[in-house]
Length: 305
Picture 1: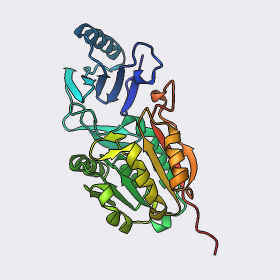
Picture 2 (picture 1 turned 180 degrees about the horizontal axis):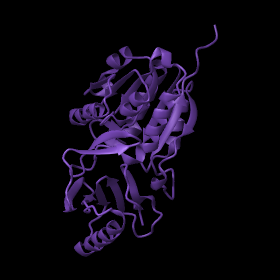
Picture 3 (picture 1 turned 45 degrees about the vertical axis):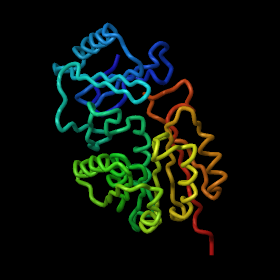
Picture 4 (picture 1 turned 30 degrees about the vertical axis):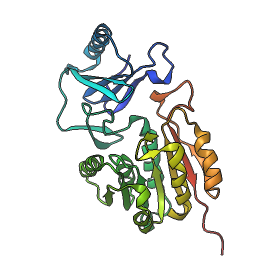
């Protein structure tokens, strides 16, 4: 049973292994649309049964509104089949999270404009910037692998002065620019560059009070965590202001927190581990080491003269 959500969120997380037999299913809300994703093929009969269950629940909670729902099947080798099963999808489709607005694209590919599992990471950024003691200097943020720049929206909404968003995907950054316009925010810059060949630009924009690193775990030709994360870590001490923070994110089930912690201890030992940000409750997993990792590190304060 679920209630009618107002914000974008996950409703059912079979991938967390807590519902035996449903490990392949997740249900998300991108209001006013529900999105069911299956990570293995489902029979027409199974899809129809789920559709009937959604219709029945929606009749109870939907306040007389029609049910809009989309079904996506994902198979190995990046085979994706997406179908609108009932109702319609607003165009443009704007969803909310914690009072902020974001563009969503539920019929396009497997990334829908907002990673729902990162909601607590965005909340951490908002609160960190809002409560930052150095506001009089103007908080500067670096957002690497920015995608549609949701972290940037959170930081600027909380009062950051400048955010540099960098991502190789021009289309994702264009959506990011729309997200800033939707929220009437200024102070962001957008660079569609390869991070690994842009250190000059990145360094010139610094030093930063906060750096967010949220890379794909494995994307041939752009980033492979096991090989490339260390290159990012090596740069952090020079890019952070004294006392600055970094958010290290990793969404690879096969790599636990130790993967990040061990490398940081070796490569950037001056940076101190602060905490792991908890994932949204809806994403509970039988093994939290498999789920999204969001680790906070802090640079040392200026040494006393």
